[in-house]
Length: 100
Image (cartoon, rainbow, N blue to C red; front, side, top):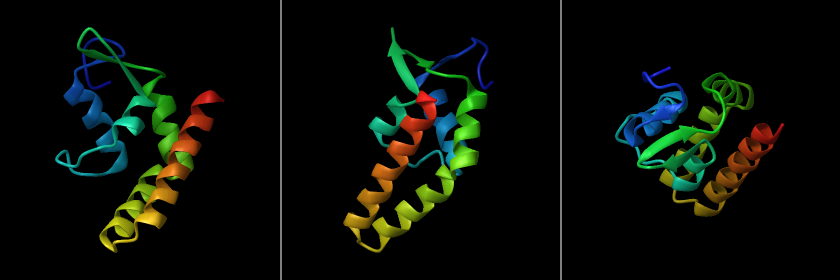
C-alpha cells in the first residue's frame, strides 16, 4: 500500500500507483477514462475500486504494461488508428477483468 489510509489516495498517489504498474515516468499523462476504471473520487480523495493486489494481477496477467508500450510506439509512429485499437483493447481487457 502506498498510503496510510487503506484504499484512499490523493490524486497524485493514485496516478503514481498506476504509472508504476505501467512502468512509465511519473511525468507521463494517463488517460482519464483509464484512470477511472480503477479509482473514484470522493471529497477530493480517490478511492480504489478493488484491491491493489487484484489490479497488479490484471496488469501482470493481461500484459497491460506491454500493451501500453505498443500503444505509445504506434503514437510515435503517427499511426493513430492502430493506437486507438490498442487503447480500446486495453479498456475492454480491464473492464472484463474487473467484472470477473
